[in-house]
Amino acid sequence: MKKTRNQTGPFTSPTIIEKFSTYTMLTDIAKHMDNAVSQKAQNGRFQAGARRIMACLAIKNGLSQMELIHATHFKAPTISMLVQKLEQEGIIVRKSDDLDMRLTHVYLTEKGWDVYKEMYKEIRSVENDAFDSFTEDEREEFRRLILRAFYTIHADDFKSVSKH
Image (cartoon, rainbow, N blue to C red; front, side, top):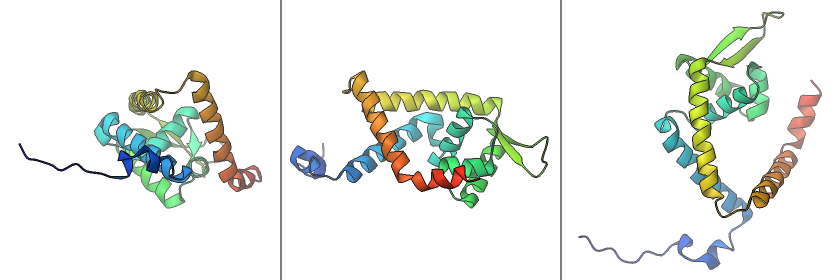
């Protein structure tokens, strides 16, 4: 058996961790959770951006690519590439608008819904593991605070969307 010396690092001392900025802790939590979901859901087959598009369509199926840009905060070329990849995988389908043929809407296919449901189960599992030590009230409060920070950060985005 190979001997290893005792390793020390930033995560071996609570004193150091407690001095991390909120930003550092949130990015670490997000990275950890994303890696866990990626490993569990479809064996890492779909990158985070593709998972976010599926989540948006699960909430409101039939969004336009412009609505996906606003909902995900991705740039147009990123959305275009992800939509094309998901369409090739049979996860989504694009359909022209019945009233305005210039508009295209994006829909989850039956296969897409199945993939999303499996992915969502894994996301919930990772969330439950991450917040296992929280009470239900603490989980709701944490979500409320994160949502408030999200709206604060993206306030200008919401103003520009409401002007359209």
